[in-house]
Length: 219
Ligand SMILES: *Cc1c(COP(=O)(O)O)cnc(C)c1O
Image (cartoon, rainbow, N blue to C red):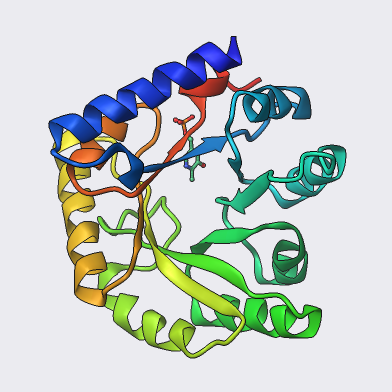
């Protein structure tokens, strides 16, 4: 069941890349497993999936402990991160995709230093400036990039966004983020979910975060 849905998503990705004139290995799939039990993560792992996204720290910690027998399993943190949880996040997540302030970056770096770990990070950008969404605004991005680039225990890999619901606004947001990524010379562009992965790939995404299309509706 999970294996077939995963394969269907991979096929959507292959087609989206083909239509966009891009190589299929340019876009990485992160399986978003929030609110689903460890057993379905294990099923996806057995079907070849290695990277998973989780939104809640405690849930991530519990799943990482339950699945510690899977050697290549990696969890990325994709939820909103409070500064007082920076230490735990640095410990358990292989990457943090939702960096959105200099103070959070500095807290993560400090805990990375004392634990002797360096983590990949993405900066979350609220491209359309929607009040309901986390992330920094586009005009504050360069200043945050400058801060994060100097922190030795964070590796700044790229940018991520959650787009507006409206499709043409989503396209504008994806295009603006792609432009920012190119201008800043960053590698990763994390955008696209179950409903809009084709649009995101057409706009240059290098990493899609897909939950519902793989695992079904969240319980
Ligand atoms: C839940 C979530 C997703 C996955 O969304 P689906 O619509 O289920 O594919 C992707 N990114 C983030 C940040 C999420 O919180």
